[in-house]
Structures are given as structure tokens and as C-alpha cells.
Image 1 (cartoon, one colour):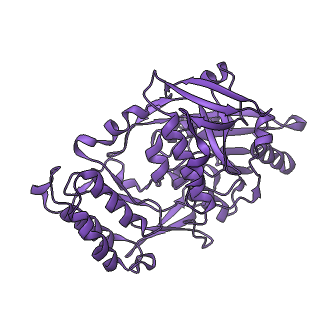
Image 2 (image 1 turned 135 degrees about the vertical axis):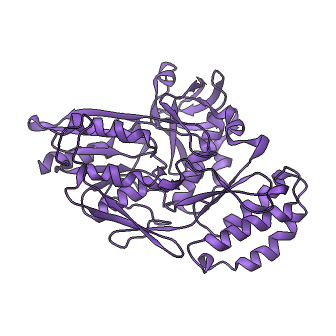
Image 3 (image 1 turned 60 degrees about the horizontal axis):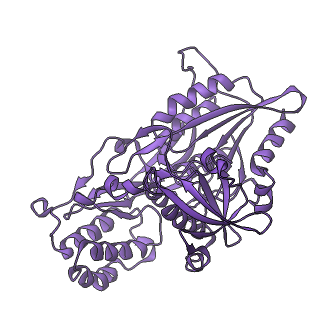
Length: 440
């Protein structure tokens, strides 16, 4: 499994942004003259509450009495002593909806880039929650040099035991996975050039204390609105199969515009293979409009992948056939089998792509159930300068499947186990390659 961390914020929010937000600044909502750090908490709370009331795709507010929430939490917001307390109250309000893509990002002097500047260093490992343990899933060169291996269990981070942190995770298998990953990332990442001290239990049950160096992530830096800088990476390879066959494998870590041309070039180089594997494990989402272009590499006629439903309108996401190569030559969309790999950290736009392709029966999905966080979001600047991220629509796949809260359920579930990781196996990839080999 190839690791593709993005930073804590994006993976926690799992943004599903529509095309018109690519270069759009957050809208300033009311009381512009009061947009300062010392604006009354009541005014900012009222603005956030009103935005959600007026834009939420469900007039019934997902079964929540929104007026009662205001009556309960409004006085606490008015009494907040500092911006941190106010944000805590607003976050509690957002949490009452029980849905993804609702968040508050500090503004002004606490800009996201400044807030997360100390998270720029990548320790070279990624983890997943497996049977209530944090287990290393992938290891990159720096961590490999100090002996860390997939399948090792994380016992302590910077001297803090992991078990007590995991016992406080919320209920629900998917949200537990996301929160466990977030907790680990907050402690593993830090300023580039610094180190992270981690205690592991290796495959033989032996305790190992390791110091990991944090490095700047590789990839093309991109920014969207007020989100921190992200690093886009697209990788591809040709994998030989039995009988002289071959499969093409394409991986990318986030749905951003920079991916499109690199994906197209990868498809051009792999067009002659017997099948394509699209690895979306660990990909938390991004620009939803890209679904229509990427899916077009695999359909010969326009097909609807799904529909985004807002309170007043519907927007269909249509796969548009890609008939021209990166070099401008006429080509036919790839007609062979397509496998999509997902896991517990596959979210948002990645889920809509995988679920959409699955719903039109153009791809077979392998791996573990995805996040189940598939709502589209908007940015709104609040009177105090913070940015409110809020869902304004719902995504329903072409076959009527609603992905929010459910996730993409693989056609072939492949459990992630510590034993297989320790053995150096990627059983999800292996299952997809076997399927392609059988079909062709």
C-alpha cells in the first residue's frame, strides 16, 4: 500500500468541493464592519447558525431541532471568553448534525497555513486502526533506514501511551478509523527537520524505541481557498501478470486540478494493458468536478455517476468520454476491466468516484469500507474572520445508493491484517490483479 498523507486538516474534513469553488474566496456573511478578532461571540455564532439553517440540503436539518440548538448554545457563545471557547461552542453546534463536511477554520492571525506550519514534516510512516491497535501500514525511505516495518504496532507517541487515547474514540467503526488516524498524525507530524519519538511493538512482540526524522512532503504544491498547501502526487506503473499479461496501476493522493494531466499521461502509457487499477486508499477527496473527467477515460458514452442534491436543485455528475490523448491524438476510452482500491481513509470525492463507477458497473471495488463522508461543502467567512465549512448538498450514486454514513462497500472485501502487513503482502492489490488476470 502506498502512503499518501495530506495533513490533518483536509483528511479530517474530507472536502468535496464543486468546480465553482476552485478559485473562489469565502463569502463574507453580514456585519462586515465587525469582522475583527474581538467581535461578539453571539454575532459570530448567529451568523454560523443562520448560514447552516439557510443552506443545509435537508430542511429538516437531519432530524435536529435547529432552533433548540440555538437556544441552548447561543448563550454559551455569547459568554465565550476567547476565540478558542467560541470555536468550541460552534463545533459542538456543527456536531449536533452528525454529518461530515462541517468545520470551523481559524482566520486572521490564526490562518490555516500558520496554524498548521508545525505539521509540515512527514515522519515517513502511515498507520491504520486494526482491531483497536494503531498499526504501521506503509514505510518510506527515511523510516526504512531506521528499521521500521509494516505490521509494527504503535505503542507510544512521544512517550504518551496510545491505548488510553484509543479508548476515548467515538463509537462507529468508520469514525473510529478517521479519529485514530488523526490522533496519530497530530503526534507524528511536526516541523520539517525535527524528529518524532515512537515506541513500537515489532512482529515478534519486542518493544522498539525509534526516532523518526520529519521531512517536507514531495509533490506539486497546490492551494484551494483558505486551506493549507497540499502536495499533489500521481504515480503509475505497469505490473506483469501471468500468461504475458499486464495491468496498469495509477495512484494519486488528492482530487486537485493538477492531477488531470498526469492521470491522462499515465493512461496514455498504460492504454495497452489488460486492466487498470486505480488506487484511492488514503485519498480523502478534493475537487468533485474532476470525477467527470477522470471517469471519462473508461466510458465510451456519457453516463451519470451520481447526483448532488441541494435544497433547491440537483446537479448530475456525468462521465464524459475522453477521446484525445495528452499529445492531442485521437484515442478510444479504455475498454478493459477497471479495479478501484479503497480503505477506511478513502473519503469524499474519492468515495463519489468509486461509488459512482461501481453503480454504473464500470469498475469493481476492492478493499475495506470507505469513510462514509461524502457531502459537498462551501466556505463562508464569519464576522470574526474564521471560516465556516458547511455541507450544502448530498450525493446519491446512479443506482440510488447514498454514500454519506454508509461509505463505499467493496464488491470484494479484503480485510487489512497486521499479519499480512508484516509479511509484506498487499492483499487488496493482489485481489484486484487476480481479478484482472482472470477476466483477460
